[in-house]
Length: 492
Image (tube, rainbow, N blue to C red; front, side, top):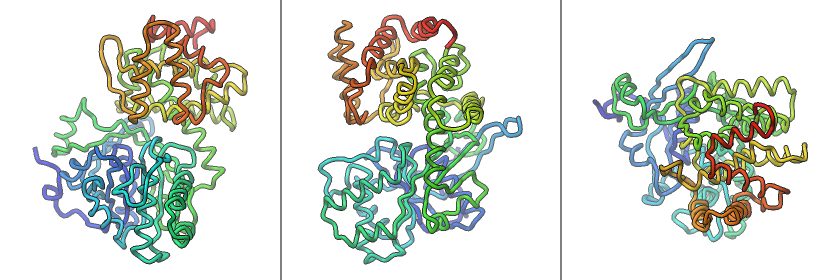
């Protein structure tokens, strides 16, 4: 079978690299890059994307072997009928690893054509890292990299107003663009960079907070041979996503005019802060919150994929109970509209085409839980005076998940090194006693770097999580779910 590259697929259009993309993963390639492809095809956007690998390890070599080409398969329901579409995405040109080829990275920054930056460095990406300096090649954190990138560009073009950048953040944290801007300006001040540079960023760069929505399971291992036969290429970067997509972008008018995704037949809206906040709370707490809260419960119960778990009555009741009793009551809006929104989310979880693996969802689970689930737990406690039982069990299940073992088998836990070390030490100290289990729970809850506070201060939380964790370890996840239902006296 033919390898996929620009020699085996000739006569593709070539456009200048106007977009720098931090992140080479499945989501950006199935969401933003697909939209840029549409904008090129329908609006004469004429932009290529140069990917920057944000961490030393990644897909860079594979992307370069395929000259940035890959196929996207979108699957879902349209007008009650199953629909499947396959498209070759050609807007990527290359991937640069700044840790190995910093010269190429600097040359990209110096290109007069570049106008946009897109990022998805996960919830853990937009964080402050102590000790970074302006002369690092490169900085470890994404905010550090962005500060150095913008400063180098500022100096390269002498502060020219038209060489500022429009930055579109796709990380699932609240006000992602505003948070990145805050950290970039902090770096600039701590590094003693010239005031004119801060003015240039203030008036000629746009840090856009955005909210993204599309389920992207990624590489379809279970049916890749059939899809490769269909497309006729050995595509190692093929990605599968759902047809549904939604992108809400908070941007100044001048930036919105330059990035006309809303005029390319896409479900993209430029919104004000109030609109984005309402959309974000609903989407992050319902869609992403359900994913992150259900992941450890469903995986430890023996399920590999979202759809498989949702077809199990006990998991379905657990999810319905979280929605109806613990998540939706914390959201502002019309109750009927919120219920309809939640029903559509659950329907998407049942998409017969999508094989969304829990282990893929589990990446950086601690920071995701803090962003997507913890606010709901605290709001529910504040409203009712009681800890929400299913979210407490989810937190206990997550601690069990990070033990790295399900039954007799080990499973991978993918997270930042400090999180993995936290759990490695906590589980190493556990001697099987209830006392040491309580210590494990208190240790995790006290990790303020992740939680932004000491969760041991939440009344009753440590005790409730320890009790659920003991139940999961002693009797298994299925029995723990049954005990939850029995304790409430009705199906959860």
